[in-house]
Length: 329
Length: 189
View 1 (cartoon, each protein chain N blue to C red):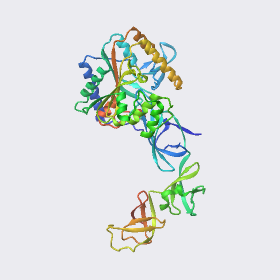
View 2 (view 1 turned 90 degrees about the vertical axis):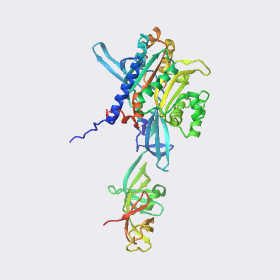
View 3 (view 1 turned 30 degrees about the horizontal axis):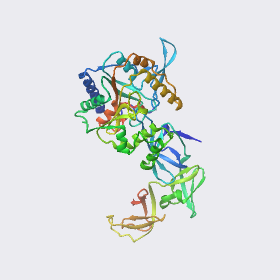
View 4 (view 1 turned 180 degrees about the vertical axis):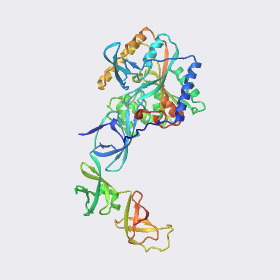
């Protein structure tokens, strides 16, 4: 006798039909705007240097390469898409599977479907408007947007946590989280301000966001990732996040185009990886070459399709919307 | 010392928190796309029964609690301690009043219960959801009254007092739901 492993999809067939419908509407939205659909490699010799992202690594051996060589599965198609932008492709979008090691839970699957798009001549504010337009079009008649709110990162923290994220010290923040909200974090170093801000965001603020679409913009410079910095006191990152019904859905940037600044950020990331005992990865030299040759002024955003489907279809977790989630793949 | 990574967290895992043994009720992975990953866990302290929430930086290690549940037979109480026995090895365990807790109301000699051992010592005693106990004291039964309406108090052989229907008499054996402390019915022979 042998046991019968569970072979059926965890998502209903209706949910899988809704997934197909959303994808059709998304392609329609971009087609009407003459934005080109592109396809870039999932495997690369380079990986994201972001210390918060862990890329799957694999090995290629065979014709074309003398010795077995490590390759990474992309955590987003950002770098090759920027190479296309630098090559003059104009505004582009892509729907693809991306892969992130170490991320599994109700709202995380180690492989998931990402919609990523870039708009020449847009800044992050223009792109926020387009995200709203896309969601309005895609969710029409299915789960219309209840409301749309805009906050800066600072306003959001002041409103929902009574904390000024630009002046608070890591110690003050840790104490407020513990005494006012009863939230502590085992293992976080005391001076990791961004870590404590992430704790406040996920444990205190996100649960209060409620129904509807919420945009957050002007992040601390230390959380700029691949966005430009806007001068000011303090300088802020030209980055935004979109939350739908309290769930993080999309992250966008007014894209950093300066090759020297980009290289410095990669190097800083690699140093942080090393300090955190994370494996080193190769930075993407082809991206840096493309930036040197010139990236058009543009904004880009990545939006999680599985979470969008979960919200549109009334699911509670990604297992409700992915046919064969990680545990059943 | 044995430890678990937060990656191993799941319901029922026994870990140490602030020197107390605890069990994980449920846990959730939380991570902003561009930020720190956390594991948020709802945890019950096995000594006090209190439920707390704890957040860990993802990947942290947590000390394992040497806790296991064993089925033991309740033997007797000497007034200060409660004595249990493993019916296969005849090994005996002695539980304090604190460990026995509310289970004391339903403990009948010879009955089997689940005893939670921490470092080999009883930490908590869980009686079965249903127990059979004999009435030692109650007002005389009203024959013919099977409506179950009203009711009266009855003292059981363990000393527990439960509300029973009017027709119940001294000497009858009753089935009791230990989770609610309620009468379920008369024992069927």
